[in-house]
Length: 632
Image 1 (cartoon, rainbow, N blue to C red):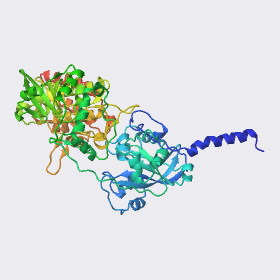
Image 2: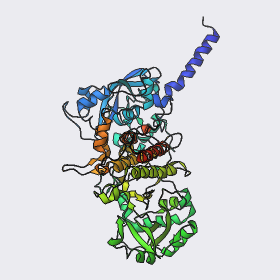
Image 3: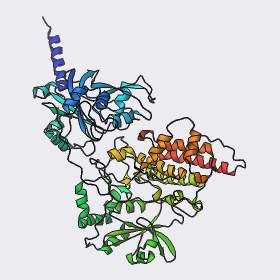
Image 4: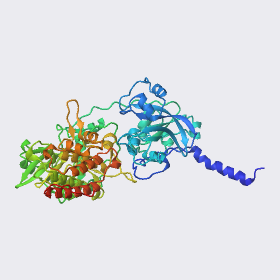
């Protein structure tokens, strides 16, 4: 006879198992992104094993080179190639266009506490856990899960290492099976996805996704590089996404906004009413930038006010508002700026929307702003740093803003490093000093302004040089708050705007940004400074990015000195310390890492250049040019 106490114990055990049987899976949220922080929470390591111990299920993978064929995708995911080809209605020898969403069948099974579909991956040069998880596998695993699964292997990956990759999957719970659900499709979230858009394309009710992933009806924000479980009663099918709208490109920029953004841009009256709102303190000091995720696709464009629409806006009221908010700025009459620039004549043009202006014998830089100037004015009116071009005044005419900056006698950095002229040739020490100045300005922006900001468009065309070749950073119209929250270094943006050749991969491809995107762009600028080459190299067949060419050329550790001599600016004519140039190229390589976690911080970069400059000055002063050791 069973004792009452034993019956009670069995009953309590049954009660304790009820939540497990009924529980769904938690959405991973933002916890995936910072690989440097140890994170062994269940949602990061995998989905809880709370249903059948094994099942057949499906993953969504988007074709991207080199994984575009049935064979390569099947091999990457350890998926049956014949079943994969049948599910996606293609032959086994076929390849998919880039960006095609593919359904891959896998076997999902419990491994300890978590479900996973194991695959294997051979590490290639440049791989990190972050890159493998988020770029190669597109979020189907996490860097924390990779580290945990391969904890018997070194954290630093070596080419040829074989990793076990735990792919995120799950089997339906008892409750879900009783409701007629047969599969839980693992869907990889891409920038711009929402519960509504995903449910529409896969053909399920939005509430079923909310319930399966324990999302709240109030907060359904989805992060790229994460996964959703899509409950299905039948085998999955995915409707193709709508075709992308035609892009409209601005000179030197690339645009990837949705069609409705362009419609809004055409409605100049509404846009300019928004501009007028910047005269309030709230807009200047409480405005948040970029608190949205990335849109599908990546097109980039600056807002441009249509010239044929009249503007009924009281410029005097705007000027008074500017004067009230930014008392340190002088408010200019537009006629003053017209006179100073000879009515913005081409003879006074510096580059693009920048003009040289002369007022009362003093020279200024005058910037004609297309669109919203509130971010730039808000930031620059409250900062004062020797390496940031100072904002002195502002003017408004017919709703368009004109910003007046201090003048830098030597003009733009790009004209000194790309113009093939011996009269415009910077010495080695001048180049190092300029790099130190730019990094100091960015370090101030990242770490000394509270809250920190990200420049978002660091280029050689946005750096001015003074009469003694000291650098000042300009072009703050794209600046964003450096916010991720909850220990997450990344924020997301829908509007991916930047200059070709300077945009970090995680920003260009997925809309993720942090201070490390400035580090990447700084690496490109530094590469321009020491090589004399442009960020985008024009070829007969296609253009190439200088950063990619450099990384490919310097990928081998052997003969670094020879490679450095080949890549360095020939206008230096050998007048530079080779051992310091090698160190500099190593820093640039770190700045250009695809994995933002492997890039140095601006604090570290400033420290590096302080030492490099000291060593360079010592080298310059040494009679024989002997190498001077520097502790890096």
